Length: 250
Image (cartoon, rainbow, N blue to C red):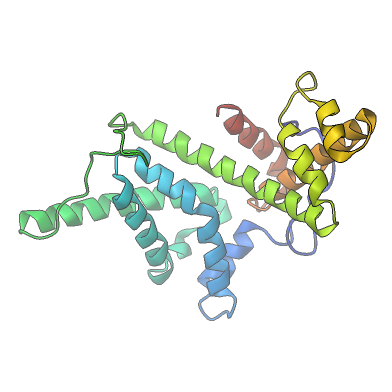
């Protein structure tokens, strides 16, 4: 995906960087705010999958990782973990990853202690995927971090696609989006404009223009989603390169 477009990100709120992931964090940790619960639910929704993938990649079995992820997001707000997060200390996703690692280690120690005392069994390190097949273990921390970053990048792309779909739905062009969406990642040589034109009942030239327009809007939404994670607009271009680099590894 190219990041050459110079369109202003259509970020949440009134525009630009007025509403970012960090303002959402600030709202979530202000328990006196009536918007705190909604802000935290949205943060958890955006980061649940990256944290879950990270815990799985550290060798924690499927159901244990699901429970641990759920407990992590529940406790992070009740134990005021967010008070330690700040833009000047680094990316929010990095804060969450480090916090999740510490939470997992503390949970493992607690379970081991309970096991020694005849209580709850330790977290299983016999990790399997969703079909029950064993995963290669142990995965080193660098690999776990990379998987976390890639899952986060995929979340960014998924949210951009969801915004794009909603835009076309709201403008009465749902059929156009459905006909074009599979061509979004196709190269110029691979794009099948004849097939798309047939689906839309139009010419190949019109189908080519429609795909170009769709890709342009996806870039704009993608930029907006990345911008939403930043506190400083000057970091946008470098962050875009980083996220695109992560996606290219998939």
